[in-house]
Length: 296
Image (cartoon, rainbow, N blue to C red; front, top):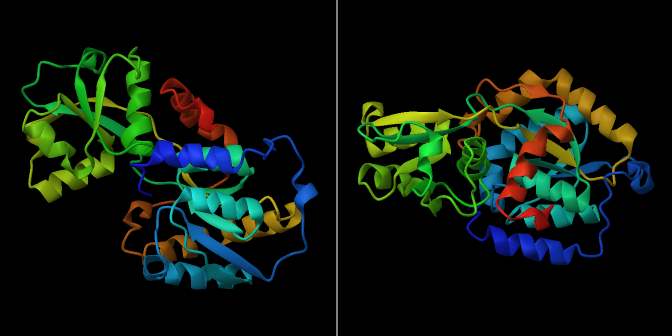
């Protein structure tokens, strides 16, 4: 998902759902409908029908077989569109990332059905090898390159590391959202540190033709919450439980199908696990700390 318009999207989402009561303590059975013959499926960080088909066609076919349902692609421009569709019942099933889930859950009561792990899914902070900075706490007053606003591993994860180091993200360091340009900016001395997801850091080293020896990691974050499959709260508990059981039983087949997509190498070695809403409280804490608690 492109997050550069995160704040605007978030405010739009809050406004569009202003009449929606937070339903986290309400029974899903209030919204239950008969078991649908077709499940509309979206991926919140894939834009456009063609990219969705190219990267998830094999997965769609396998999912259709496993759930014994017709699975139709439901392209969305962003997680805002997915959330609105989930709320209305137009969309039944979505694959989403942690930061997106937290906001969707707050406004639509999207039901987490299964989590999917991402090996090495954690954030790091790197500095030049010759930097005098030895720890995250020494980044007070410094400029830090990050990926993009709202990115779990490239914004919220690093911010959590800095919070734990005792720094206030609203006043004690400067963030530059540089995306793919972050590592080169660090090399050229334009920023003091780079805070990013570990696998993305490794990818940038390769694509930029740089060596690990040119940089030094000063902080490594805890494993981040998993990506997850969510379903509309319009589905009955019985339908959700049936879907969950079939996903678990066939998880190896599903993950193998996911890996056919060019964008899904991140799921190599992944597992399906139970999805618990409380696992995402870390994301909520960071949103509060950066002054974006209104989206929750």
